[in-house]
Length: 258
Image (tube, rainbow, N blue to C red; front, side, top):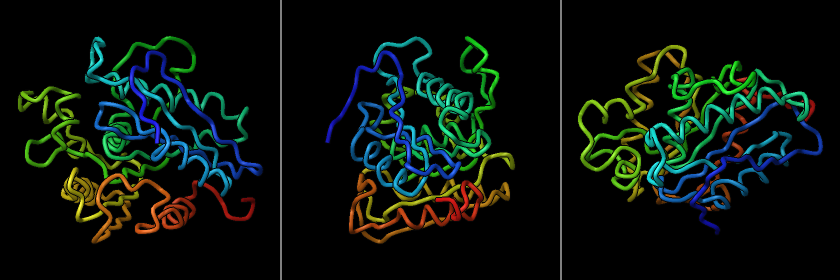
């Protein structure tokens, strides 16, 4: 599977279904904020879900350790802009601008959770009318996600790339998404394997606890085995139908016109 880095101009790869059901999904591949796992956690996801009627947008985002100003916020800038762009172009893609979810994997799951909790954060100045759009996702799905930046809980490589290995407690807290859940955080679908040797399952449990405390609807699936980085095609961890059921229950799309 391809691993991409050196993204200078963020972009979206679009998977358009033959019969759009009105729902859309922004998909954010992971890669420890070192690279982007575009096939396993991006294009494969687009193929699976677009076959079910969802319009899927795979995000190629800038990586924080590649020399950008405001490096720690660069991924969130790109995710906010992507969400706003999808909503602004909704008519072109036959989707409902109010029903655009976000899904992310591993470090992309951290970015997914960052968007779900920080969709309104003023990380960049508006550049055009598209930035008037609300960047709040309709629902979120952090998959085997890096949720926290706290040492001992986080994925060390993701932390080092995003905020630096020796980041202060204040910076650590700011980029730990479990600290920023509110009742306005969108409903969440959480998935993790308990034998994940890269990103401890406690990340997902911390996010779930924060969502429950804020009384946000959350569906959680923990698999005893599966490891890390299993993507969407692994027969060992079959979860795509679970997500589609959740998405339908939440009203992201209706089954009738899929």
